[in-house]
Length: 317
Image 1 (cartoon, helix red, strand yellow):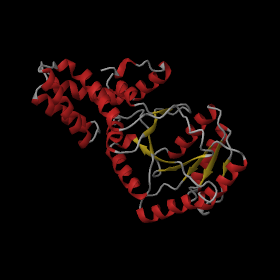
Image 2: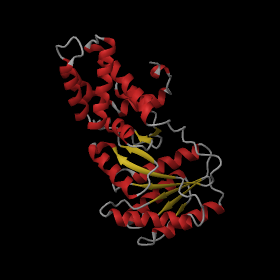
Image 3: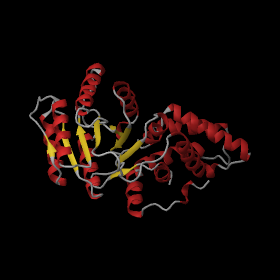
Image 4: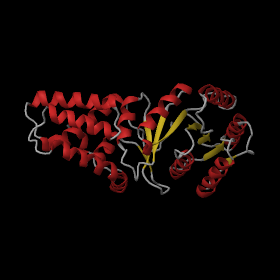
């Protein structure tokens, strides 16, 4: 296997390693107990490993796929020492994700032939949606791109104010209206402003509610329809933000939002300080939607483009 021969950016890798430290420590504490006193990988070890992976929020379906891959390795190699299990996990999970979840995103790049590139951001309140938008806008700006923000979450004054704080912080224009305004109207005005400014990227915040899928679907459909009056192929991306620290609840939110709207990309936040980082492996494997970004800390630069091999390398280091 050649997955881990790539040399990662040292600063980025150190940040990722630190972010996943709790997940890594928790996993290895469980794994050490599972293989204690065992010299080889046998059925008992695999049963224990299955429990460890599920309890590490990897998810049942993905865990079963991993166990099947390990079983094939045991069959092929005849004898696998328990001490080799860590390396085998890294290799097999990296291979599995590379086979099932497509190509990784290029470092905060956008297609040159789509201008403005419109990103509509969805997700429930409290997942780090506004923070992700601000950090994403900052990264795009550092790439030399002109960015415009749209505060279309008009159901909470706090949401508008929070986005304004980020706009001021990264010195990016924002289009906003009063609380209670029509979200579609804000999105329309944002795209009109972006076109007039010859902007490269537009990021539209939307309301973080999921209590009624029909209402959510109708609202997001209306926003899309109105935006297309200005930019016919908008939005180019529908980015769903998920809180990685909620573990399996992030799976459920992903399921519900993909029912309610056509999600094209995922961002998993708050991976620092949680032991539930395994959820990213499960989400990356289970949904036919790429994980594009991960939140690995509170600093403005602590939003990273998700790289499957790099993530697995840090999780199982």
